[in-house]
Amino acid sequence: MTKKKPTPTPKPRTAPPPKPPCEVEGCGRPAYSGGLCQTHHRRRKLGLPLEPIRPYRKRSPDTTKFAGLRLSPLCVDRIKRRAEKRGLSYGAAIADILERWYEEGARPVPPAPNGSGARKRRR
Image 1 (spheres, rainbow, N blue to C red):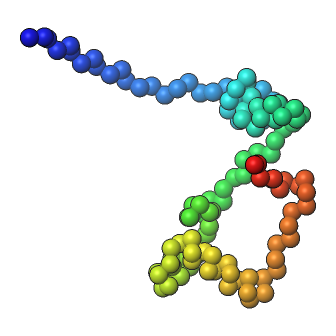
Image 2: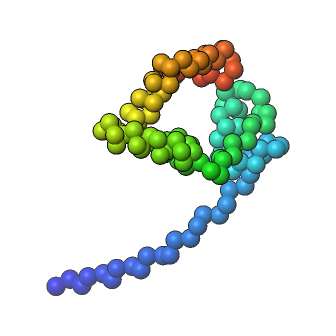
């Protein structure tokens, strides 16, 4: 008969040490590789200048994350009521509300001019 080896006791997990900030002046995001955050690392690989990037947008305190969007409680309530009333998913209810809004004469959003933040699809 062979003896069973004792099961080793798992070591307690500790939180990883905090990452140092990006080396680009004024960035402050956590370093990803080579002392740069992900955005500046990507810019270096593409041969673009390492300029300060805009900060993360602060969230409004009175909004709720709902269906991947940041919405006011009033919007969330209207979407839920529309979905329940018509037997739709939340996404379909949002599409329904937007289509109705557009049909009622909402001004269309003009397309972004080239180079103003509009991204091209990679193939």
